[in-house]
Image 1 (spheres, helix red, strand yellow):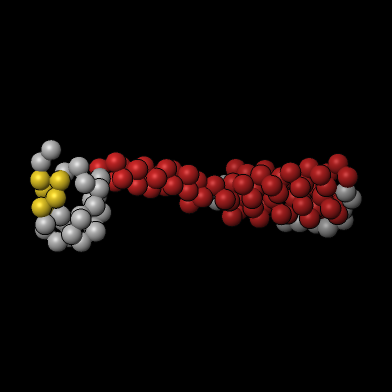
Image 2: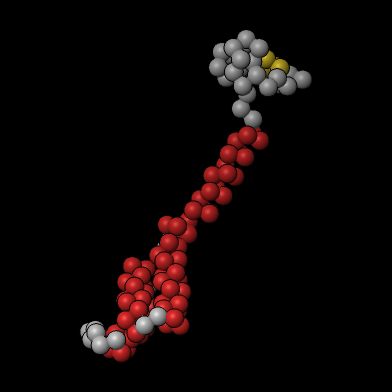
Length: 118
C-alpha cells in the first residue's frame, strides 16, 4: 500500500481508497475508462450502418416487399404505383442497377395499367 495525491485537492490518500476522505472526489480507475471506451466503440459499430446507407437499403427492401404484396393481391394500378415507389427508393439509395431494373418493371406494370411511363 502506498500513498498517492488526490487529483482534486492534492491531499495524500491511500492507493486503495476509492475516494478522497478530505474532499470526497472519486478516483478515476482504468477499468472505468476501459468500460467507457468499449461502450463508445460498440455504439459506433452499431450506429455505423445507419450512416452508411443502411436506412436507404432498408427502405428499398421494405418497398420491394410491399410491391410483392401488391403483385399478389392488388390491381394493375397498385403494381404500377408500388413499382414507382421501389424506383424512388432505389434512387434514394443511389443504386443504379436497382433503379434500372425497377424502372423497367415500372414501365411494364404501368403500361399494363394504362399509364404510360417513360
